[in-house]
Structure formats: structure tokens, C-alpha cells
Image 1 (spheres, helix red, strand yellow):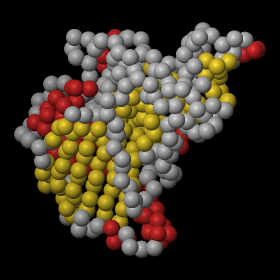
Image 2: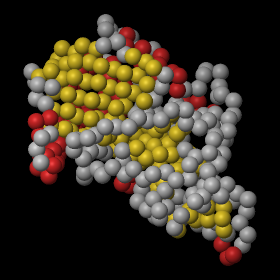
Image 3: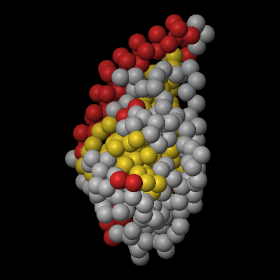
Length: 351
């Protein structure tokens, strides 16, 4: 058992002022298999993800603290260690350098790490401009009786705030999606969460939409057609990767209420057929309409609003808490230790 991970504060950079704090998705768990090493982007920086032979997931700074080689280009995972391609320095899961190539004495070097966790088949990292440890957690997601989730990753121009703002933009539901009679309750903010509830009409059926934002990096929605007994869990994970570039990972699962009493194998088979059809024939076409707009949108900080659109500004005022204040970064801090053993919660996604 390794000692807790000492997480070293990251160097300050002016570009970090463009980025929010919170939990943000870096990958699907399925893409980081034991022994795998993956390079991804997060807020203007490379992040190297790797999984040890025992299943521990780690998110580390890209460059070796010895002489700066990029671990994502030639580095390998050997057992529980990540090995630098330059001098074959090996780093344990707690970040300490435990051996050097050619039987040399390892230097007193520590590999900088991010707090990371797996949540329902996604790998998320904690971002804090002052180097503070996570101040809140993502809740458990109740998927009892739901299908295996579907999901894909999209890369777009603009701001990660687009999906959440859609939740309070009732005037877009009809022209973009063809959903009528939207009624939005006043958004409710509570610290790092914001709840948005609305009712609409979809093809003559009541549609209930209940969205909870967990920071700006996790948008968890319940969609229900109660008269038909259809329930969907749609979770979007927007992540800013550059000042004007972001990714959006999706998670879609379906439950048919009338099939809940059926034998488990039959229910699973029905869910797989229905969710595959609903995902490809309804969700994907609907979501593409949003993606096309977001990818070419100028996210204006001072929009000219129409009647009924003040909830957009309510959302933006809530979102401002996750960004640095206008006068600069908060004072440097020290991150607490991260438990060495992080469970591999790899929810199986359907392809």
C-alpha cells in the first residue's frame, strides 16, 4: 500500500484566468485500460492519464520533473509505475520517484498529480486555480433498472457553459427541437449546484425535464414522458480544453417503466433494443442541432435578451463563482493528500 499522494501546486499562469474550477471529465474509463497511457487536454495544458496493473487511475503532469521529457510521448506503464522515456525514471502511484535506469539512485523528484476519480464510467479531474483540494463531490447516480449507457465525445469551439445555459433558455426549445409550451420554474442555486425544472410538450406528450448542475462540468438531467412510462438519464460533461475550445462527453441511459416487472434478461434485451433506437434515431439528431449552434456561436457576455430570458442571467451570475475574480488569482494554496487507492468504477458503455 503506497503512502497518500502529495499533490504539488501548479505554477501560476495568466491563461488560467480563463478557466473555471470544479470537476471536469477527461476521458471515458473504457479508454484507459490497465497499462494504458492517454494524453488529453485540460484548460490549456496536457494531462497524462494512466492506469496501473491493479486498476489505479492517475492524472499527472505531462513532463518528467527530472529533465522535462513528455511522459505521454514514449513513456510506458510497468506494473504500478509510470516510466519516463528519457532516463527510465520510474514513478510510483503516489508520485515519488522510486528507481532510475541503469541501477542509478533515483532523484528526490515528485511527479505532479491532479485529484482524479471515476464516476459512472468517466474519468474526472479536479481543477482549482489556488491548488486547493476538492471542496465538493459528485453525487451517486441511481441507475437501477436503466439500460447500459451510450455516449460519445464531441469537440467544439466556444464556451463550456453552452449546455447548462440551454437548460434555462426556454425560447430555444421550440425553434431548435420542436418542443412546445415550455414552462420553466425559477432556477434554484445552492452553492456549487443549480437546479432547473421545466415542463414541455413533445409530440403531444407531457415532457418533464429536471436538470441539476454540479459545478460547470457535470449537467445531470432526468427526462420523463410520464404518460408513456419512459425515463431517460442524460448527463453531459463539458470541459474547457483551450480558451475557446471545449469537449462535451455524453451519457444516455433509458428505463421503460412497464417493463420493470419483466424477467431481468428480457428487460435488459428490451432496453438494449429501445435505447439503441432512441439514441440513434432521436437523441443524436436532436443533440446535433445543439452542437451545430454551439460550435459556431459567439458566447456574448452582454446579450440583448427577449422577454422571459432573465433566467439566463441568473445562471450566468451563479456560474461566475467558479472563475477567478477580476483582480486575479486567489493566493497559492497547498493541496491535501489524495487516497492512494482509487476504485475503478468503470460502468460498461454500449458501443
